[in-house]
Image (tube, rainbow, N blue to C red; front, side, top):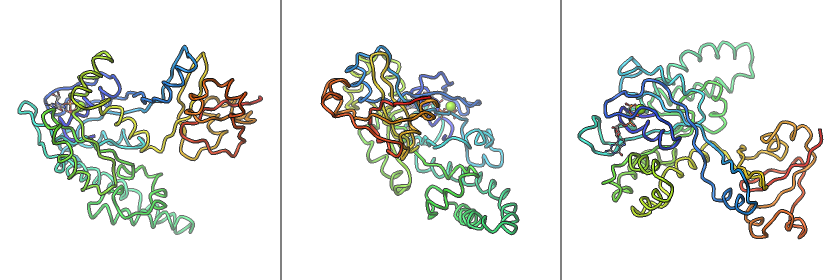
Length: 352
Ligand SMILES: Nc1nc2c(ncn2[C@@H]2O[C@H](COP(=O)(O)OP(=O)(O)OP(=O)(O)O)[C@@H](O)[C@H]2O)c(=O)[nH]1
Ligand SMILES: [Mg+2]
């Protein structure tokens, strides 16, 4: 989300290969766009090569591009804030803050000012949500004492929000934030801020990103990138893209970092499966145990879970094949209590 012309749709398209409308006039997005970005993963590439897999399936993250917010959106300015309803159920937010200068694209170029405008609208939307809930929950808590901690968390959140502080950078404890989850507050989501730089500003990226970083004080991940440049690069064939980005000293570019940061922000981890038919990256929540991860592949694998055979991806690549690893006794056998780790390669034994 972001102010008009911040580059939200350009970023969305670059990430998802989508075709959301991009234009130099404000409010070019009037409908919510949903798309999927692939998570670049060198581990998956290495395993696919090892197994000569006919199919390679990366993990994905879904992105949603919404209409712009402006100051006063809560009271109907611009397109109002009804689009926020559509993102209540997303798991994290990407705030796009404009720094690039372009006389043909109306709008401010101070990312901190963008941030303050956005946060105020998000906070106002959350205050409205809490106002609608607080009395009801207080009444419910009178009848059911066990709801007392929930009401206390709601009240703490209200104090912060009324002081203009988004929950994600408030003093609320993790337990309180957990209790607030069912209320789908916008500012109770993890945040990634993208400072959209002009190509000519890339040399000063650090200086332009730093004030935003300081403002968040660690409450959000902050990335500086030139969305337009990355979007253009994304249109090119892979080798031309690599050449352009390398030539500008941008390495693989910022898009993989945006997807990777979003993935981590969501507390997501990857385990892998590999074979000649397919190598695949699977997504699980940090802390999940082997049966739950088996269930990500197929519910039958969870239902009939017997054991997981496990090896670290780098170990498998070093040994050269699952068969050899097995012969060398390097495949671990893990039971239902095993906490799967990011980068584990799994084979599930099951019986239904
Ligand atoms: N010069 C320059 N222009 C950019 C950059 N990023 C985006 N733009 C331009 O800014 C304009 C707005 O980009 P969009 O991606 O449509 O922005 P948006 O945030 O989706 O805008 P709305 O949907 O209208 O809120 C387009 O003309 C883009 O080409 C950039 O890094 N540099
Ligand atoms: Mg747009």
